[in-house]
Structure formats: C-alpha cells, structure tokens
View (tube, rainbow, N blue to C red):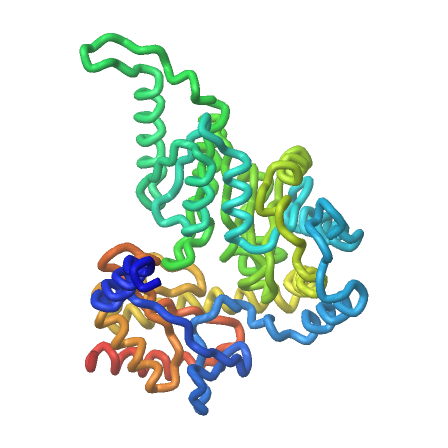
Length: 409
C-alpha cells in the first residue's frame, strides 16, 4: 500500500516544503460577519466568505427550504431526466430565465458541475475555445474536457484575444509542410464553433471583465460568448441579476452559492440550447437532482434580492468595498484592480502571506491566504471579502490589524 501511494506522499511533502500544502479547518458560522475557527472559543470577524449580501442565514431562505423539504422530502429521488423533476423546479427555472432576461434556464448542482458539463457539451474536437488566463479552474476543466483547441489569452485583453484568434485562423487555413508545400486547411475544425469564455467577476482579483467589448467582438467574429456570472449574480444588476444577460452573452452561467446564500447553479440561454443541454450535458443527465430544500432556498433568494431593500444594500456594499480597497492601498498594499467586494491584498511571497494571515487570526480576524496554484506563482494574497453585514467598526479593526501585520510580518 505504501509503495502504491509513494507519489501522493511525495506531492504532499513537496507542497509542505514549498508552503503550499492545504488542509481543511473547522469553521462554525455565528452570523454573516462572525465565525469560530478551529474550535477556538473566541469569535472571529469573517472576511473570507462569498456570502456577499449576508443572506445565507436569512429567515426567508430557511423557511422556504424547510417548506420545500416538508412538501417533497429530503431528496429528489433520481436524476431530473428520470423522476427527479418536480413541477416546482420547472416553474423556478422559468422565473430564473425571466430574471436573467433569457428565453430559458436550467438548474444544475454547482458551478463546477455547470462549467465542466456545459462547456464539454457545447464544444468538441472541431471547436476552438478562447479563454481568459485568469478564468476559474472549472472553466478550464470544462474547456479541456471538451477536446476543443484550448487557447488562453492575456487577462482582460481584447487585443490579445483578437491576436490569438487571428494567429489561430491563419495557422489553420495556411498550414505548410516542412518542405514548404501548402497543405489542405484543417478539415476537422468547424469555424462556426468558436467559443469565447470568461468570468464576469474574477474570483481571486475582484476585477470585472469588459463585457460589452467582449460581446461586440464575439458578434463580429461569429463566436459564441459564454460568461461565468457566479460572483456577480445577486451583487450586480438592477434586480441582482448579475452582469451577463441576453444582450451580451449567448450563455450565462451563475451560482446561487455566493451572494444568493444558497447552493446550486443555473445556465441561462435560449430554449434551443436548454433542450440541447438536457440531452447532452453529462453533469445534468447523469446525476441526481439537488435536494428539494436547495430549490426552496433558491426560490426565496431570487425574490429577496429583487426587493428595494436589497437594491439599496447592494449599492451600499459596493460603495463600502471601493472605500475599503482605497484604504488598504493607503496602507501600502497592492489591491489590484478590484471593483467588487473581493479585495485581494497581494503579498507575492507565499510564506509572508501565510504569516500575515496567521497574525490576523491572532487578532480574531479570519482572512485566508490564497496561494498557488489557485493564483499564479509569486502572487499569493489575502482574499478579503466584504459583506453587507460588516460594520464600520469591523472594517476599522481589519485596517488596524493589516497595518500592524505589514510592519511586523
């Protein structure tokens, strides 16, 4: 047994030596703004979660989750194609489609399942996928699973995307052999199956893609645009619908597990694409539907984020986030181009980043050190995540601890 696990042991030893070994820690949420970490009795301010609107423990979400559990049970019994689709699920998808401004929508188990399943369904070896270099790992996984030609362009650069696409098409159409004779064009490639893939909000940097320019470029090139709206859903838009909509993306994927305070993911698209995915998306076809309680929470969250109250909460949160990023920069830290409640405090050196995170924890502030391979080499950072429940005094404590950590660590 030990011999067969030797390469696992080596990987873990190497990761520990490099300061990159990760492990699970015990977290107990006390509220949207506080938690207990690793069983320590003292409450910590939680600046680590994606619960941007602070609604993961909202009474309406819990009540609706319990209501759906009482009505339908704790499990959906089968995959949705077999016997796991209840009429209420279909009605919920219609509401999601209207909210997002699309013809149709489909609920899947998670953002990772959506991205890996949908991308590997809509693209194949005759396709080419052009992807932002800082896209979420699930987008990369789905792109590679598809078998498509996978071409990554420099983060946020439409010029780099255009150049990559130009070079790809020139090479495809004008191949030459080693002795200079012209070869036939790549007959396996289908020019109508170019897909541009990008996050709208990048989860480790907090910056926002130039969506309108991407949409215009995709239309000019006849490419499909697939946008991952996970960290924008609930947080942006007039009704919390996010940044990707029918006017700028062919397919919008988003999750209910962040600002929406629930679990699961959606794909918003045309009716044709939805019907296609019901037949071809492996992570939908071959898995049991989520528990009814999860759908119930989603139903309540969609109503909640569209209220006038939460429109104001979103505005205040974005204003507070911009101010906090500016204040952290004032302490001498690099916060990148964050324009969201995700504020990276980019340290660079992995060991120093871990020391700063540990120092903050000693001050009862939970802010996780994000290290490679989650982020590029030499870009280890604290990922500060502000949410609507944080108070000004919480932010003052964070700033004071960061200032001290900068000097002492």
